Length: 321
Image 1 (tube, rainbow, N blue to C red):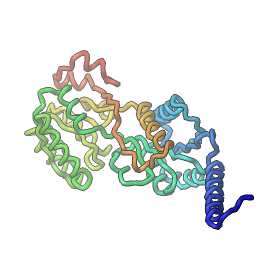
Image 2 (image 1 turned 180 degrees about the horizontal axis):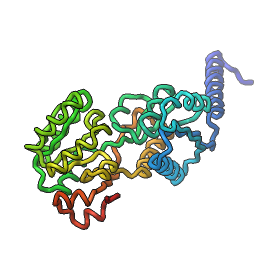
Image 3 (image 1 turned 135 degrees about the vertical axis):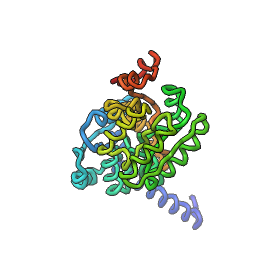
Image 4 (image 1 turned 135 degrees about the horizontal axis):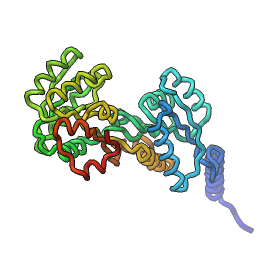
């Protein structure tokens, strides 16, 4: 005949209670995401343009190669932020495990409306805008300053002074950082502040007396569509090559721009998504710059300005005009 003591009885009750809790937790987790179930991923794009399609394809292909089973549902703002509320309402109703956003408008909509779902963002103008958000990370479009100046020296090896016009409210810190990085490459940054579009002609005139190249730092005041023609005319009249912020500017007459492999950006975002699926908090995964660097060249501009470009450099361009 066995004797169960009071202490044994207490231990038995405690073990039974713990086992009940563990079973309840396991059941809840199984219900929320059954073992072997596909990940449910909402894809929210700012518009239906080719770069966004390539980034979606790169994301899905990389997850598939890594053995991640996922069900996708895609939503588009179709270039209009007014469509954001309806898209996010559907996404919130869908109870997705993760949201993959492409473009700043789509990302801003998701960040505002989905605080408890991890968000992986791509094709963001400035990756620092993703910092300090607990449920967000991603890949921006800006290349590191070191990358930009390294390519500048390869294409324009005689450059000593780099001119840049900027709005201090938007880009003061970036220009201060660029000035320090330029010195590491033996370059001097000739920076001119402007506060209104009316300030730009005088700033260009000052730069024309000192700069070997005009660097097109992304700036909503200086590089607006309305100022594209005056900036490019300045470049041609003064034979000061302009480094454009995108291939669109190169097609219009800028000498070159850095360019992106959007499929690869999608793959980069997928790697971040896998880290989140494996338990990392999205906000703990640092935002990244694009790891693949492409560039576009305008050969007509190079000929007119008598800028020699070696054959290897031309062959390596993503686009030539």
